Length: 62
Image (cartoon, rainbow, N blue to C red; front, side, top):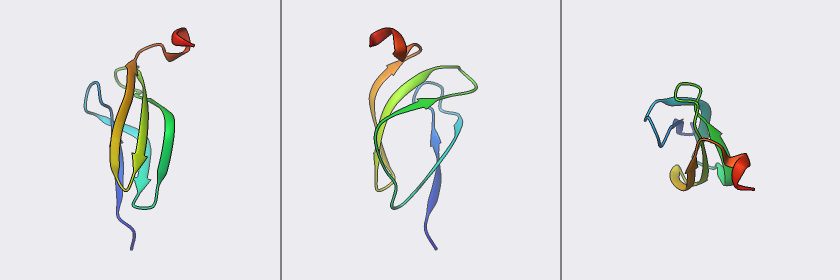
């Protein structure tokens, strides 16, 4: 059975609505937290989450 984990918000530390498995690979994924309403850009590989950018308004940076 594959190991699964919830993605935690890098700002407030609460669970988001997204899950990852051992074989999940994400690049420049916009992670939204429904509790603190912040959006962060993350990368995931082998259950390791790296925060690329923390911002509440990523669309303003484009």
